Each structure stands twice: as C-alpha cells, then as structure tokens.
Length: 244
Image 1 (cartoon, rainbow, N blue to C red):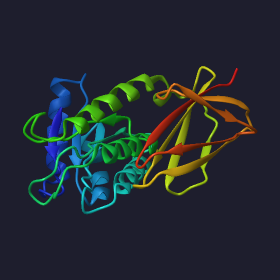
Image 2 (image 1 turned 180 degrees about the horizontal axis):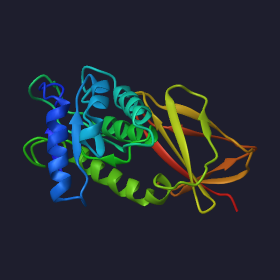
Image 3 (image 1 turned 120 degrees about the vertical axis):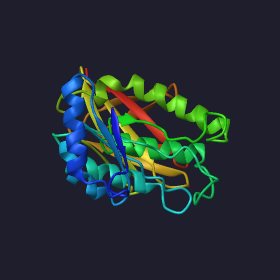
Image 4 (image 1 turned 180 degrees about the vertical axis):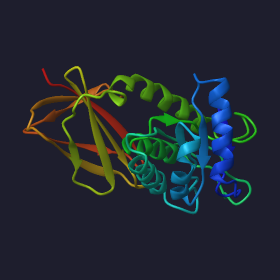
C-alpha cells in the first residue's frame, strides 16, 4: 500500500498518515505500507509510525552527482537500521520540468548498485508516461531490466543473515560490500565516477583462490585477501568466491 508521496514536501503531518496507516493495517494486515520521501530525507524519521517500508526518490541527474543516491541510501539505512527496510526509487526520466535530461544507462547502473551496496533491499524505477516515453532511450530501459535480473540472482546473499567477511575498497571512487551465503562470498562493487577506475579490494581473513565475475564469465585471482579489477565508467561488478 502506497499511502503518501513526498509528504514532508506537501506538509502532510505524520499524525494524519499514522491514522491512515492504522486503518490500512486493520483491514489488510498482510501487505506492507510504504511512503516515498524527497529532500530533506531526514524528515522520513518523523513518519516512522506510518509505514513498514521507507522509500526515497533522489533524482540527481543532471544537476547533482550520482553519489547523491548512495549517500541518501546510507543515511536512511543507518537511521532505520533494524526497524524498517529501505527501498530506493532511482531516476529513469528526464528532459522535462527542471530535469534537463534523463540519466544515461551507465548513470542508472551506478545509482542502482550504489543503493544496493549501501543497504537498500528494493528498487522501483520512476518513469513518466509509460515505457516508450520515459526513459526515451530504449537502451536505458533495457539496462534497468538487465539489472533487475542481476539483483534477482543475488537475492539469497542480499537477504542472508550469515556473518560475512567484510571487504574494503582502496579507492574512494569505488564502494563495495560483501555477503555470505552457504560458504559462498559475494562481493559487490560500483564505480561512482564517470571515468574508468582500477579497483583494489581487501577481504578480511586473508583468503586466496579465484573470484568468479559472475556476470562477465571470467575470474580474477585472490591472494591473501587482495584482488584487483577494472571498473568501467559508472560500472558495477559482482564477484563470487567459494570459501570451500
């Protein structure tokens, strides 16, 4: 159930939505209730009693950096840690109102993977007027579908509660995270800049072996917990290491 769109911006009081939330839950306790928030995103905490899932819609392109999406996600995940899951609504439109253009497919990829790496567990792209109008680029919309398949494949790791082996990126332009599921370590990385980057990673525990680049049909060597790779502009990668 979606009971409000950007309520802080429209000056809808939390108490009003809390009443609506209680009504919805009384008649349908089985489906979650969501609200989408706009900047200032910290206002979301005032509505914690009116929702089950926190959603946010940072639309940075073209006037703000795409890092905005990851920063907002991290902020909300920290604010609601252990209480409410966070979903992100990436921008998949532009060229109208005050958005001068739509995001490129590379920008969409970076924004999506930043959100997942920072802890979002749901993605809902926002378009306008149907699939063939926004985004105007069929390649961009195809990229959204491709990422949906990728993230679906990673669901067991993204929802795993097993204690992972943390991973660090040596570059501030590349962020990474890890998740463990049945002795398989998944490492996700994304480039937050519009330029190719060498990515150097270190994994806690000093493991060695091969990291399979699961969407590229290749592998890279891991030695003493360290491995390196190249990430394209705004690119992402997923690595899988069999700890057995």
